[in-house]
Amino acid sequence: MQRRASLPLLAALLAPMAVALTGCPPTDGQGAGSGGNVRLAFAGPLSGGAANLGIASRKGFELAIKQRNERGGVGGQQVEALVEDDKGDPNEASNVAQKLAADARVSAVVGHFNSACSNAAKDTYNRKQVVQFSPGSTNITVCRDADWTFRNLYHDGYQGIFMARYVREILGHTKAAIVFDNDDYGRGLKDAIEAKAAEIGLEIVAQESYLRERTQDFKTLATTLRDKAPQALIVSGLYNEATLLAKAVRNDLGWKDVAILGSDGVMDPAFAKEAACEGGYVVTPFHFANDASPEARKFGEDFRAAYGEDPDTWAALSYDATNMLLDAIAEVGPDRTKVRDWLAGKRDLAAGFKGVTGVTYFDEHGDCPSKPAQVVLVRNGGFVLAEKQLAAE
Image (cartoon, rainbow, N blue to C red; front, side):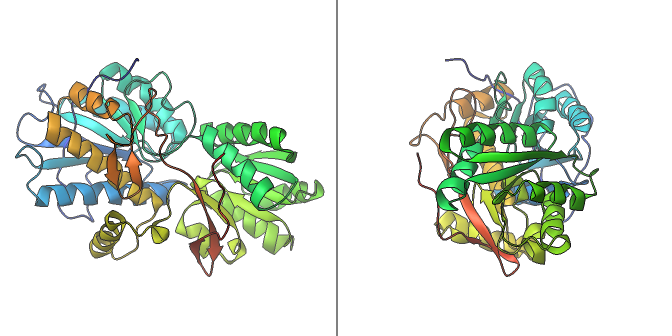
């Protein structure tokens, strides 16, 4: 049973929540947590086409640390927060990973968010023995061959099966087209959808890719798709391009009778607020408004008090990842290897971390098998739980 060692966790107090700390203080060559504070880092897209997702995730991270410091920190030490913008770019993520791993007082990293970024960074974290705990990356390979990488949501092998089944079994369609972001996330999810579709009688009549932040002509893409006569468009990508596609489909072409189902990267308020997206479906690992657990209610209240807005899926997952790491440090100290081993030891429901998004525990890869998917519907500028959900296989 091969599994992670441990790492020096990072710490960081966040002072005013509106202010993010960018960049790491110089390392003093000491072990994690030495010199006063415990350090935790956040790495995600705070600019670029995935910025909304990264900013929401960062807010969850900051809130968890602020609350822990108000309760006295961990082990009598305050937690210092370090924040890095990887811009959703794999090259930048690799640079950020090297920077954070070089700071010996960083115990662990909450991030990265995009799958391509987590994959680009994981070799550095493995080599330097720092935990990478992603609250957003779903590509199936992210945690494979990476003893120091964990995540607290499902992977795309699961999500792809779920999406294909939802289109066939719940929406009742037999023909679909896949529109995918040409990166690790989009391609991996597309492959999983396609494989399951072949098993269940869902014909994939078209597959069209685009480049995030580069492709602008979605009207031509939508026209190509319409010519193939799918009953559903399955979007494997992020919210911005999914919105552009919906506007091209509904507004430019007047194509009203095709269903749109977006992957979890589409789960952002910006998508729901666009009129052309009304009636669209989105897969999500967590739907806050539908969860009545005490943990979720308290988190919602605290988040609104801190930021003046409702939390979303990504804020909740990041909040849980941060609190789980803080619990690890409180129990075993900021040593990187001990923190990793503590996480790796959470192998079943009974031992798992109970948070806002449910119970988090890990399999032998560092994947999280305990979080099911849900489907939400865009209605009146927001998300509501779809009336029909998919039963587990």
